[in-house]
Image 1 (cartoon, helix red, strand yellow):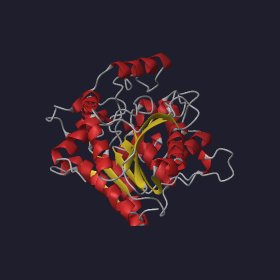
Image 2 (cartoon, rainbow, N blue to C red):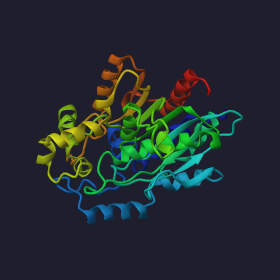
Image 3 (tube, one colour):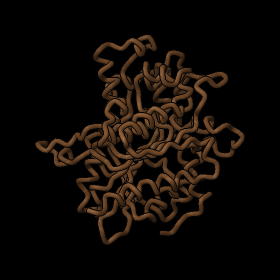
Image 4 (cartoon, rainbow, N blue to C red):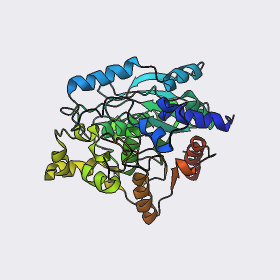
Amino acid sequence: MNRLPQPWLWLSLILVFWGPAVGQEQRRPEQRLQPLLNPAPHADGNAVGALPRQEDQADRNNLAGRKPVFQVVSRFLAAGLKPTHANVSYGPHKRNVLDVYLAESATPTPLVIYIHGGGFVAGDKSHIDAKIIRSTLDAGMSFASINYRFVDGKDVLFPAPQHDGARAVQFLRSKAQEWNLDPNRVACFGGSAGAGISLWIGFHDDLADPQSSDPVLRQSTRIQAIGTLGGQGTYDPVKIKELIGGRAWEHPSLLKVYGLRTLEEALHPTPEKQKLYDEASAITHLTKDDPPLFMVYGEDDPNPPNAQPGAGIHHVNFGKQLKTQMDALGIENVLVYLPEAKGRDVAKEMIDFFRKQFAKRGSS
């Protein structure tokens, strides 16, 4: 494998998930991590967290019109690196599309699937730095990047994005023979919303339906490894308030994903909404047969000065909760806290973690 210099891999991680914070090294690690979920800068602007349709559309238009540093650099680095198959439809919705980069191999390759962040209202599969893709390919693993439906507070709610992610896994498995993929060695990773979807896929019971008329839905949704950056194990506002404190539980997306209008509703869910909270939260599905997890966090202060709704949504307590429960179940996991990770190449560590898990399973 052609190894990239350590500084490039670390820079790649920053460009992918911390884009707007590049060049602001004086900021604390948790501050550099904050943009991970929030590429739409006005998404937290509403006092009660509701995100009106016109405000939501403005945020998406703003995102589309901006040229964040990670996108500019990614395009520069992507010269000569194009998807083997681009904008492939994996489901019935217009955002059910993915790109796949196939590693050259005489035998079936493992697959790493990237799921973008953006608070479930923004983001795109192209928001991944080419260095990450290249290092994965050089490690002999194929790479895919997916889009999924955005929630709109009305017609598209949780767990639609999670089900889209699961269907993407099924679709890619259905292409295993055609694309020389090993269906028994699949990992998902992402930042923030993408991390939450990756966790949900990893922990949820298999959604395969052997009797389905859709051949894609007959495939397994189970994966062999998970990677997260600033991920949330729970999307239950009540539990987030208890776990994190501060204003994390007030994040606008936590109302929108459930079709709620007020914070009061969020803290006093009906039995039906509580059932949905539980279904949409990865940690409620965690069992001892679930895959190993590599997680990275930077935030440690849920109440920074002038805290806005959602501050602390990438707090390390999410990771500590996951680690405690996974340790109790005997599931391998790694928790990296950025302020204590100086000099470590966590991007390479995550890729190596995937390789280690795949090696345990051998090839198909």
